[in-house]
Length: 250
Image (cartoon, rainbow, N blue to C red; front, side, top):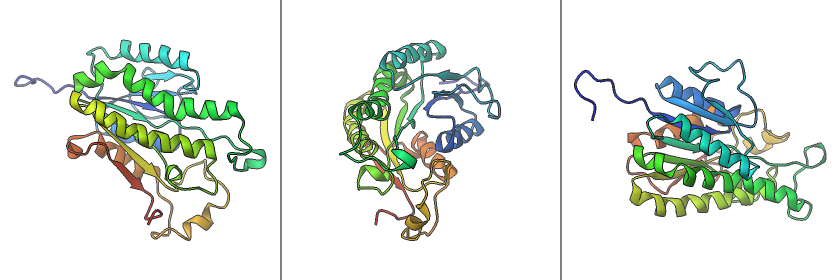
């Protein structure tokens, strides 16, 4: 407990897939609330990002490479000077496409693509959570896995490898909640539907016509839900998957 007149410890969040869309909005939401944000991405830190210490707290890592992921975990632990991590948000995800952006199904997805998708979308979140277990435990932190509406139904644009990896990530969230909970670490997931980002596929407007709210979600709306799951406002929410899709699943 901080002593009188002592400033409270600044909380720290680690986010993968921070360079655009939901990840970018999430960094801005946590940074605005005074959190230190350590971001991870395949790309170098973009110069137009406004948050404090962004470039110094950015780690360039290829989550498709297990060895590089382990190296990044070592680097993250080194940067956590007080040995505490308050939140891990596993947002990075990949979904390969065919010619002209065509959907890849079970019959035409190459094995190498299946393996790469599962390494990024499923194995990397598990590796990060286990590799940073000590730091999460010290902070009584939270893990948020970003799944997808495609993980529970066949989607017209999301490929089979992506969809099944997100279904597996939802299952992993339940397993992690059972294992991490006794350590005081909460584990939940969010399942976004059609969110207005740069990776939307042509034809999304046809899906919007079927959504009860009749609109796309925004990255900021998803970021608010992630923030909720990482704060005391959700202190008894554990092992849950929150659907953020405007009623698309009903």
